[in-house]
Image (cartoon, rainbow, N blue to C red; front, top):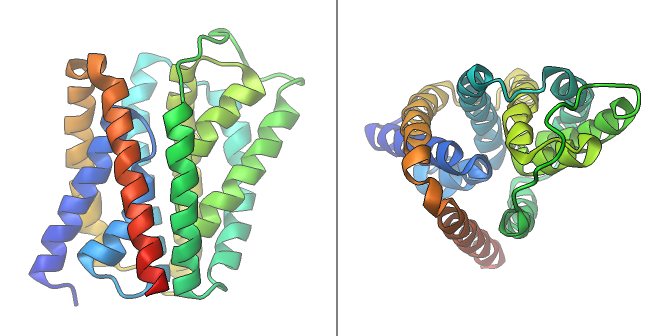
Length: 257
């Protein structure tokens, strides 16, 4: 049973993740698992991963609807990457469930430090706005999709911080198009991982519901705030990188105690 306090903390955690995704455009889902474990109090790391995967998928679907209206989603490119990535996500989730919880959290903390570095180095990329799926970029899209899907499924994350640069690398599309298109893969990876964990009974459904509600509310506020905070986007990104780094260090310290 989920207590009232856990429900409130779950909703607050979802709001934080949704807001960060809406304002910064990536990386927010990496906080979902540590928030569930260390703030909400989910004792099982695998349950935290399965629950967060479904919540992240819901947030991605909401964001995708908003971005689709702007016409910045490259559906063909995103579909090939997502299709190959679903296979990777399924395989990654199977392997992830075989790793014991404490070790998985330690590996997750190390991944967060990598995410912090990648987000710190991310810069705008003009690219080719007219790029479309073709014979030249399809193999690269499938390859990077499989790789990012494996990591996404193993750790139970959206993987946007990997998918965005992968799309830019494979197609040379502008960063804003890559951010929008990445949500197709984030949605597909999240649903695949969540389904795998759900069949193993590793999803806390009540917590998923409140986390999704909080995430949708936070995401809506984040998207609305994005225009107002556009001039401070770099500062917000740096602050978020600092938060991710601090949480990762805290998780490593906890794992060594």
